[in-house]
Structures are given as C-alpha cells and as structure tokens.
Image 1 (tube, rainbow, N blue to C red):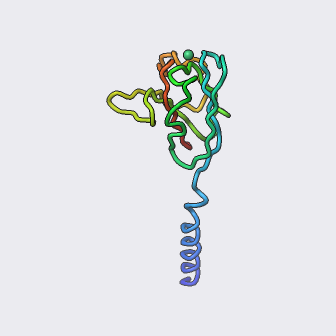
Image 2: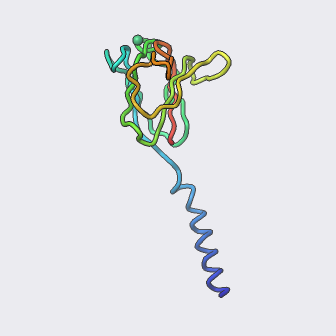
Length: 128
Ligand SMILES: [Ca+2]
C-alpha cells in the first residue's frame, strides 16, 4: 500500500510541476478599429500574441485616435477580450473612461453599453 501511495504522490508532483506551462493561456488575434459605425471607413488593425492582460496599443495612429466608431475582432468568443480606453497607455482612473470588456464585434461605439464613440486612444486585450 505504501508503494502505491508513494507512486501516486510522485505522479501528482510531476503533474503539478508541469502544470504552469500546460495551463498557460496564450492567444493570438487582432482588433480592427473603424472611423465610422458598422465597420465603415479604412480600418486600423492591431495584432497581438499575448499570454496575459496587455496594453496592445498604448497610443493609436493619428488617423484613428479619438475617431473610432466601431471595432471588429479577428474572431468572436475566441478566448480573448478587449476594451478601449479614452486615455493613452490604457490608464483607467479618476479621469479615464473605458468600455466594458467585450469579446464580440461592436458595430456602434456610441451605443450606451459602450459610450466611447470617437474617444478611444488605447486598447487593452487579454486571454479569458
Ligand atoms: Ca468616428
């Protein structure tokens, strides 16, 4: 009986030691910001390959900064979510506002659920 318990413990420890690498989430995707609602106008795409919550765009190019009215993800419900901040560097605080975390396309950022039309200046994404 002792032999079996020791074996089980050994196997258990081996599995635990291997767990961090095998459980680590890494997700690759992209988010595209459009200047008009319903994905209208020339999109600006931000690609990412991340294993934790990351400010994937601390600033935005001048042709989309404070102009985004809709956003499309590389895939919906695909193991990551994003949020848009109205500040640079993904700062959310007393003066910073942001959208909710979303893992779906948002055709109209003026919708009350998001309320960040023409205001996004940085983008945060993370695995879920
Ligand atoms: Ca706009």
